[in-house]
Structure formats: C-alpha cells, structure tokens
Length: 78
Picture 1 (cartoon, helix red, strand yellow):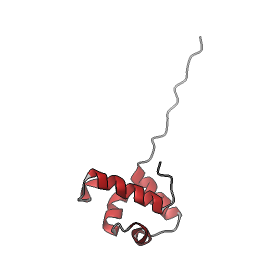
Picture 2 (picture 1 turned 45 degrees about the vertical axis):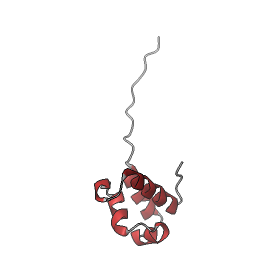
Picture 3 (picture 1 turned 90 degrees about the vertical axis):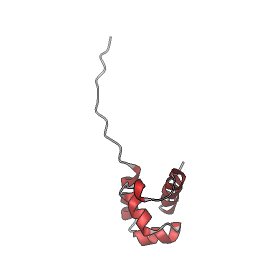
C-alpha cells in the first residue's frame, strides 16, 4: 500500500482582487473601465475592494457588473 502525501494548496485570490490586478497589468484606469462598461467609478472601486454591500442594487446586478468588468478587460467569463 502506498501512503499519500498531503500537499498544501494555495488559497485562490478573490475575484475582486484578480480584476484589479488584471486592470492594472493592462495599464487601465478605473475611468477607462467606466467608459467601456458604463458602470460608475464608485461602483467599480467597490467591486475591486470586495465591498458588494456598497453597491445598492440586487445580487443580479453584482453578477452583471462583475461580468461586464471582466469582459471590458477581455478576460474569459464562462
């Protein structure tokens, strides 16, 4: 019988932090993303900070905002 070795896995980053990193790596400002998505900078900043409670709309809007943001950065959304 072979004993299995347990390996620690890295904790994945939250989607909000990954969006911010992707935006910065592309040299885009929040204003650039605002122009592409028509989502206000205030709400984009809340998304990047994982402050979903600061977005006054329902959960369906949060999902739409995240998808629109990812598409604006040309990231896969499926």
